Image (cartoon, rainbow, N blue to C red; front, top):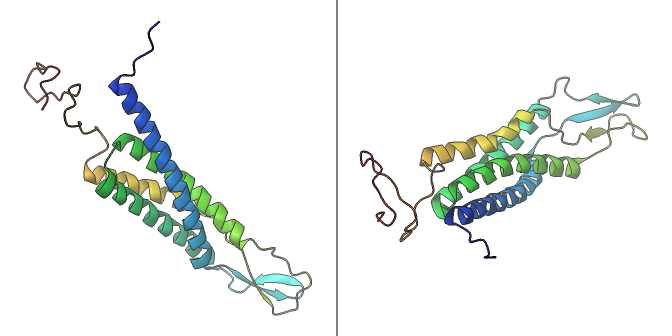
Length: 193
């Protein structure tokens, strides 16, 4: 029995999946940083103790909406920076990188939400607190649509740069042939330059 010989296509698929996995890990790490920034920058809703109960300081606080916008903006910025870094510096394995950055963006969003919520978690209770004491709520996610900003910007960067549809042929790669329009498909292996 002869051992199976990996073809260039098999190697390319493995490398693309490796690129996807790498970008998912990098994206999740970026999501952790985004969660830290979100917990530091996002406004939180305040409650005042009154008669043994918590009452919102503002009847319709904008803090919930603004906190979600801050998270969406931070995720968009992180996704944009990673996509631009790929487009300017890396430019290898576009399909694997695109898949990794898209899935990584979703993972990063969930990581950021979990980190932000864990860091700012507070027990909203008036037990044992004097009237007039102000209590700040922890961060919670109300607009899950903010999690699509990262993948949307990644897809936009890939579309604008015109990459992601085909792998560039490596120099001296005799197995890659690109048929020129009008050549009738007569290109043969080794004809590619």
